Each structure stands twice: as structure tokens, then as C-alpha cells.
Image (tube, rainbow, N blue to C red; front, top):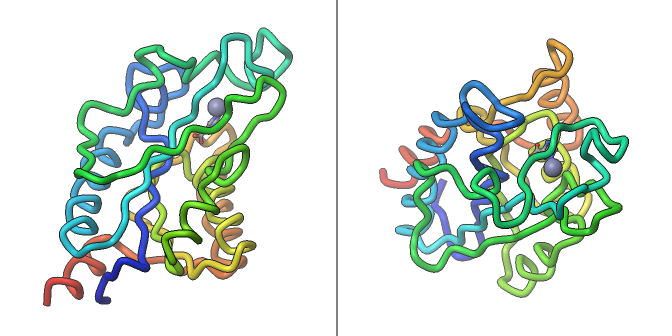
Length: 196
Ligand code: VGL
Ligand code: ZN
């Protein structure tokens, strides 16, 4: 698989609040941060683009329990929990996509309430490679939107982690993404074939 400027890595919500010690932690969050850092370095070296989405809620967001939503407060704008995980290293030229700023809308997808689609289309991107957190929410919805918008979409299966409010949610999310036409691939395979 040769990467080109028409390829994009989309790093979904690798933020402190979704990792150990955060308010909505995924156990393997730090591993995902390290794997996505490696992915970002390779994509950048090969001339492909790197986008990082950031859940970016105002205080009292409608998705928080205090406002009648399902989640503990998380990724509040400007807080430490909203920062990218310290082991996520992003290459020069990466772009950050903030979403979830509308107090009334829970934007799980990186495409919702953001200009990600415009940025990808303006850049001529037609293939997206998606990993990050969490498999069963923001990765799921980002991948489903990418498919709906016509992007050839790869799910990086060794660079995702699920919240699993219910056991099995992660696997069910993967099945939905595959049913929507996403192609499962391990980062190792992308890297191997790229550098070979
Ligand atoms: C997410 C729950 C609430 C995610 C964001 O990034 O998957 N999950 N907000
Ligand atoms: Zn959120």
C-alpha cells in the first residue's frame, strides 16, 4: 500500500479524558496514543496528510450527566482532560479538528459540527485511515460518515479502543463499520507495504 497526498490519517480523540486517569477512560488509551504516533510519523514521511480530532465541549454540555446526558463531564475546552495524550506525537503540518463545541449537539463524528469534510475534499483526499478513541462512539461515527461521504475508508484495528458501556460494544461497532464498507487493516501491514 503506497501512501500519497490523497491519503489521510484521521486520529480520533486521543485525549487525556479518554485514557487512564481521565473521566471516561479506555484502558488501552496510552497504547493507542503510541501506535497512532507511529502511524502519524509514517504518513507524514510518505507525504500523506494527518488530521487529529479533538472532542471540545463547553462546560455543562448537553452530553454531560448534569445536563441530562449519558457521560461524565469530559474534554471541557481548555482543560487538561481535553488535551491530547502526552504520548501522542503529531508531525509538522498536522491539522486539528475540534468538534462538540455546540452545547446542544453531541458530535461523536469528526465530520459533524466541523469542517473536516471540506478540508479533506479541498486537499483532494480520497482514502482515509481511521484509528483512535473510542471504537464504539467517535471512531464508529467518524468511519460511518466517511463511508457515507464516499471516502475509501480503512479502520486501523490495532489502534482503536472501546468504552464498552455494554460488553461487546466494541466488536459490534467494528461489525457495523465493516458492513458500511470500511476495510480492516493493521497499521503494521500499511507500514510494511509502504516501506517495502
Ligand atoms: C466520545 C463519548 C463522549 C468519543 C466522545 O470520543 O468516543 N465518547 N464523547
Ligand atoms: Zn464528548
